[in-house]
Image (tube, rainbow, N blue to C red):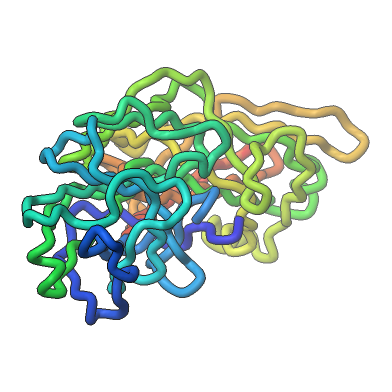
Length: 349
């Protein structure tokens, strides 16, 4: 995955307005008047993967931006299309492809309300935001980074003065990044290649976003949840992933230093208590042997201090280390926020 998350962002508030002098001018003025433009910000946020880092350079963010003349209600849109943000200070206008409505602010100076949604429609095959009105609905499968930006209010007078609003995008899911390591060469040989890893249980898979605030309510009941390959973004099933052996197995922390990242998944946030927060199933294939599946592996989330993580996991990343031991698998998850957070280590025996 080209832009996999190193730091996990959770942004809750809308940023202050921006000026066209901060880094760029909006698109040339259309015949209909002053062009609609905004700035975009994701305090640390890819395409078909979690969005990594800040918006800058080659790390652009293309989001669906809706405009309405009625606050909080986008049933009838004044403008609708994608905007591609290349930094966090320059103003941008609508992209040409797929745009509908007017690209110019209302000439009478009345208010225009703008809200942002990510992923944009069609970024993932056959998937789009539906039931768009006061809310919008998106069904996700674990590979999509669902982000929303609270509504901002603007008008032609502000734009004429060179002041533009900022859409600040917040992560609405929880990112689990999976890495693997064996405690020794003998343990690595005994377990063989990693074929499959997935979460077990029932998971929410639908986000209903209130467009005025950007808040997301999660619902749905998906049975099981895939973990995706960190390079191909395909679900890890039927794979042949080598499990590296630890160079130093004197302590669990030393073992983890040899771990290799193999996958990720984005899942509906939970209220964690640090005990059995998630459950995993793992299948491996030893050389010359038959596939072995280990189910019911408990993932206990920890904070950055190594203590139990408690509370809402929205917008946080947990690094889950699967440690393959001679007798079992150990899982430990530490969160690093998509701002700052912790981990989870899982022993696989």
